[in-house]
Each structure stands twice: as structure tokens, then as C-alpha cells.
Amino acid sequence: MRWLLGLLLIAGLAFVGWTVRDLFRPYRGYSGSVIVNLDPGTRGLQAARLLVSRGVLAHQFPFLTLYALARVRRVRIKAGEYLFDQPLRPIDVYRKLARGDIYLHTVVIPEGSDRFDMARILHQQMGIDSGVFLRLAADPTPIRDLDPKAPSLDGYLFPDTYRFPRGVTAERVVETMVARFRHVMAFRFRGDFSQSPLTLHDAITLASLVEKETPQASERPLIAGVFARRLQRGWHLQCDPTVIYACRLGSESGDVDPADASITENELQLDSPYNTYRNPGLPPGPICSPGEASIRAALAPAEGKELYFVSNAHGGHAFATTLAEHQRNVAAYRRAVAAARSKAAGSEVAESAATGRQASAATHITKRKKSAAHSQQQRHAPQKKLKKHEGASPRGLANARS
Image (cartoon, rainbow, N blue to C red; front, side, top):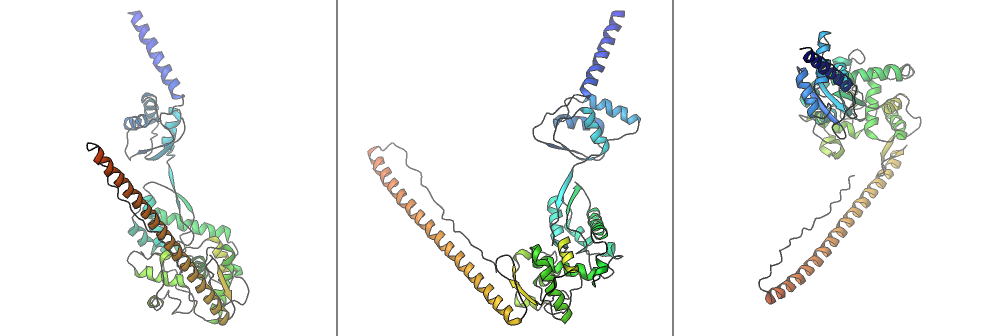
């Protein structure tokens, strides 16, 4: 009987030793990286089986031992997505789950995005309901203390790189983005508004126009200067992006694409307070969320006499002090656009011709092959017929936007 107890003792000690050793042995049974999702309410045994099946753990028992000991201390593993990309010891795997060190997805909100752009990005990348996000972003309540005149949260959902867990709510996203705006205003613009005649509302609104007019940082103070001088004179700003934004507001889901929007004469007459072709002064509120550079340009516009600007068809703008000079710049822009379209059309014709020559040559070769095959068939009737080949002639498309 003693020898049986001794064997059991030795076996028990061996098992404990194996368990302890395995707890501190790194393991990786997958290649690259793997994401493991623990649903709310996942039990220890379910988690252990999942981790073994995904190659994170070699065995269940060491993990379950830790799970059982931790339950005594009322420590629970937390639900969420977990990223594993390197060998880990079972004790480290358990600690990761107990801490709730969940995987955060990176979401980039570009400068110049409006709430419709953000709704699309968040839906595509995080599965957030666009309708819920748009409803929240249309309510300016979270920013009322800073800007009582804000008509929505456009302009106040700061464009930045964010990290959210899977399953994050639209409410949490809006809260995070507004908090980021407040942080940037408090720490990066401390004292700047006191040196500007603009209120926060007017500064963010003007910055949103500047942001949408140019992607070039060097031009932003210049464009802000043009707008500032036109505002001083009581002129219409005639800012195309405000018309596009007005059209988006008129759409049920803001599905007007600003990157492919050609403004028509009818749209220039759109009855909207955001249409700066019909209404002098700034629009009622921001038309997008501007970045830091555009906000600084609005607070400190460049001095000068320029009152007009137009695209130079090369990614920048030509500025003018008089209407006559501006009209010459507009004529130059139209010539550049016409030349670009002519060149694109020529390229399309050349590509079509080249495709035609290739098709002709292919047809000629096919005929020769068919002729040779026919002769071959006549000489050797049992031989297999050549397969009929049908070629496609894709037409190249060139799109030159004005």
C-alpha cells in the first residue's frame, strides 16, 4: 500500500512540476499574428479551448489552473479582441486577458472630413451604424458651452488618428472626438484666440472653408487672408465647398461626393444659408472639421491685397488683387484644363488605335493558325481541332476633371 501512495505522490509531484514548468514556457503555435475574440460571458474552459485551437496555448490545464486560483480572488478575464503576435507563456496570456489588454483598431479621420465622411469611415472600419452617428453629430449639445451658435458638431469632431476597440458605440466615438477637440484647443491654442478678433465659432468656420479650399499648407494663410479681406468689405465669399456642403445637407445621407462634385449653375443658386454665392459673410457654421494648420491660418491670415483666387490646374492657386487680373487667371486656368483634356483625349485615341492594331495582328495570326490547322486536319483527320479564341479589346478611359 505504501508503494502505491508513493507512486501517487511521485506522479502528483511530477504533474505539479510539469504544470509549473509549462506556465513559464513561451509557446506559439500560429504564424504571423492571430486575433482571438472572447465574447461577454466566456467561461474559463471555453477561453482555454479557444486559445488552444488558435495556437496561443499548447495545453489547457496551466491556464485553467490560473483561472481557478484567480476566481478565488475574484479576478475575471475580460471580453474583447486580443492580438497575439509573439510567443507568450501561459501566465502572460492569462495576465493579458485579466488586464483587458484588448486590441484597438486604428481609425484615421482626415482633416477636412465632415460628419458624412466620418459616418462612412466609421461604418466601413468599425461597423458603426451611420444613421446613429449622423444623428449624434447633428446635435451640438456637447459643444454648447464653447460655441453656443454651433448648428452641429461639424468642425468640433477633431480630425486625428484614433484607436477604438471592436464594438465601440457611436456615442463613445463622438465623446472621444469632441474631447480631443477640447484638448487641442486648451493646450495647443492657449492664448491664441485672445490675440484674434474672431470668436471660436467664426475661427473654426473660417478654418473649415480654408481647409476645403486647398491641401497645401503654404497656401492656407493666403486663402484665409483673401476671405478675411472679402469679409471686411462685406463681399460674398463665393466658396465652392460651401455649396457642395449645402447640397450634402439637402441629401438624405450626404451622399454627394465632394471629390467628384461639379457645381452647376442651378446649385450656385441653391437657397441655403450655407451658399456663400447667395449670402454674404460666413456660413452658419463649419462645413468640415479643419486641422490645426487651417485653424492657425484663420487666426493669423496673411496680410496683402489679394481679393481673388482660382485654381492653377497644378494643385495650387493663382491669386489676384483686381478683377481684371483674376479674369486673366481664370482664362489661363481654362486653357490649362482644355489642354489637359485634349492631351487625355489624344492618349485615349492612341491607346484605342494601339489596341486596334494589336487586335488586327491577333486576328491575322489567328487566321493563319486556322488555315494551318485546316490543312493539318485535312492531312490528319483524327487530330483535335484548335480551340476558338475570342479576344477582348478594352478601351482606356481618361478623366480630366476641371
